[in-house]
Amino acid sequence: MTNRRGFLIGTAALAAAGMPRFTRGEEAGAEKFKTVLKKALIRKRLTQDVVKTLKENGYPGVELMDKTVSEAEARAARRMAEDEGLQIHSFMGGWFEFNSKDPAKRMASIEEGKKNLRLAKAYGASVMLVVAGRIGGMPMPKPHEFKPEFDSKSLMLSRAAEGDFPEYVQAQNDATKYAQDAVAELAPVAAELGVKIGLENVWNNLWVTPDFAAAFIRSFRNPWVKSYLDLGNHVRYAPAEKWVEALSDQIVKMHIKDFKVDRAAKNGGAFVRIGDGSIDWRRVRRAIDAVGYNGWVSIESSGWTDAEHSAIMDKFFNGTL
Image 1 (spheres, rainbow, N blue to C red):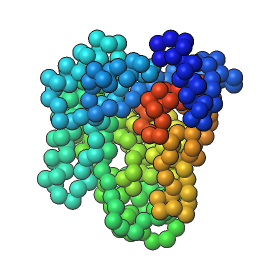
Image 2 (image 1 turned 90 degrees about the vertical axis):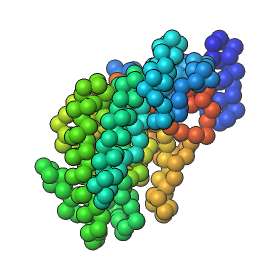
Image 3 (image 1 turned 180 degrees about the horizontal axis):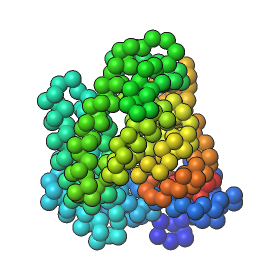
Image 4 (image 1 turned 180 degrees about the vertical axis):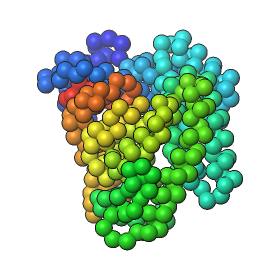
């Protein structure tokens, strides 16, 4: 909002929607943090309408996800953003079939990854989000039952949880090996282009606990392969702050959403609007400060307007959400 009147109108709207009112940067109880977080929206592509929304609601950055554009179109979007004082900080490379049983599909995914890295470069993004594969359609533990036992060097899983889940264990081990091979092939391209690969913890039934995910990221031993941490995606397995603590200096970008844990539900709970879930946002903010993460947080949520999400991000950043 561009003036005090607009800001007061906005805070009144938030109060009416059930959110506490506060004054930007002056809310009672705001904590002092050494780390600086920057907020961004996720949009398919950059248009003048998107630019207007970003500027009106206080977002200095955006994360884009349109993979159908040409490199020339991506460069044009970058110029548009720069002209408006905005930053395209990240690009969603998306889901890849690195662990497909079909060698042709695995190779096609690697080539798609290279293409998308070039798009990320054209956009001016410093990171490309990558989901390294997925598994499903087999017996597996419930989210809270996972207790993976794995070799610290090979990362091969010997046990997923109490009980017998041999098909899952094999599928996880295959995914680890194939993903390591694929990302190792993409990493030199990422280094050449200056775009980091951000491996996201997403609902793909792989590397589902903080220690396992952190071990997977660190196995690459490569500064161009890092973690794209979604703070809400894996709360059904472990609290969000545990993910922050485990991934620590490997975190290169963050997404924010909320999740309400319900152990009796099919998926261990459900995504809800931010503030209505099980995440202790103040504890998460302290954990972020403790690991020294400075950088972008893209909001990936619904239930609030862009303006309301912006105010929520301010509260999260200053430790009062």
